[in-house]
Image (tube, rainbow, N blue to C red; front, side, top):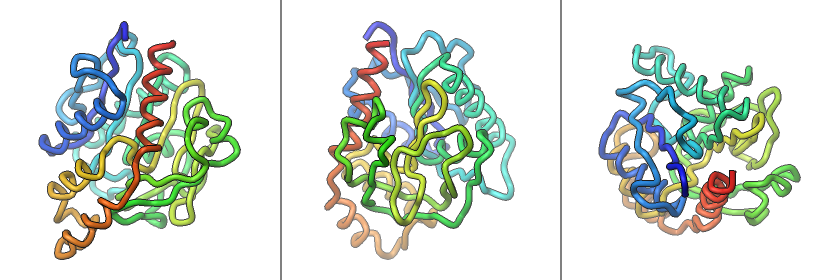
Length: 242
């Protein structure tokens, strides 16, 4: 890889942030020096995006629908919108995940709502016809499992975007917007063990019943996450070929 990839972190919790970077590194199939870690919670978005082959955006305990936001959260969301604009215009390639899809949806004029939450654990995902034809998603099985844990979701595919994946609980699981932006509601990066370790950090954050940790983590470990990993490898391969 001639230029590194950029991981943009939106997690205030450093332990979870470092672990998520490692999950993306392993999922993308790159070396440590091929995935630069940028802490967007503490530092603004880099101005020199063109030195990176592509960008991946991790999840966050923040929500677009949060009624009271700190100055940090507002600045972070504004930076992610600038990144989305750059990807839509083809100035970079970006994969937004989890919290990131909400930021992009709002930026595109869509609705982010609390009406489509999903619990912590595996979810069944289905590709749309457009997803089967998409350059990234087209390598995946038409139906696959992925890990989810979110309190808000996209109500319907936003204006100008193409729906790529869906399920009954959350109608917008993934879409493409513009020339080089993809967004997923599900988490494509963690192994089941990495996801359980993340659950420890967010045990009391309201994603699941803290008293049911053992039961929920056992269910997480039943998931097959091979297909989401293939999505990340596809994204990395596209970045190398660009």
